[in-house]
Image 1 (cartoon, rainbow over the protein chains, first blue to last red):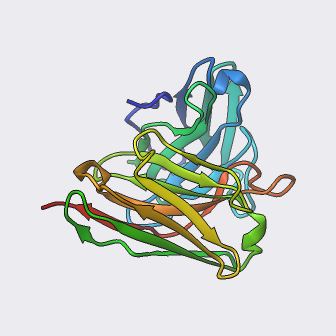
Image 2 (tube, each protein chain N blue to C red; image 1 turned 180 degrees about the horizontal axis):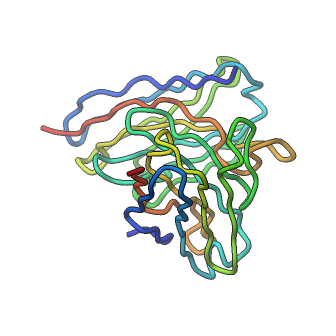
Length: 111
Length: 123
């Protein structure tokens, strides 16, 4: 069981907006550790979509946005497109475990 | 163009050993911290090990501590993971990833990943 909790799945119709939550604790997100988000299609290399809580790497559409508050973070995807269908993982650093930690992952389905 | 290419994955018996490699190109490998991350079948991502750019600082996840050894050869632009005393629960796709440099895009995150190499531990 991961120290970062994500919903197993979310879904939305094309054009809609969805959010994926990532709930941590006072030993990871709550310490101020950065939260990063990755998009992963099975059989491919995971791709960074948000780093440092809110920043988008070049090449990532501005439909993707990140936020953080106290011990949780969220990834929002607006204007859903079929190509967004993938697994999404949040990641941070846990000071109690002295380890980089990932959420369990959320499967996004575009209806 | 940044490229990370893992190799060395195979089918190995419990208790056996394996060495994974990750060949890096398209960036100054010796400047970057590197990590190994794995994904077991049907599971999420799990951090395995981390090494600083010089190799002087190394960390391991609890599940592999004492069995796995991370290393790097900056002259060959290659990252390694020596895996000993393998167990069935080590079965996974193993990815190498780069940590983004301070002040650059992707800072502090695993900003570039390889495609992964499959390790299967089974008798």
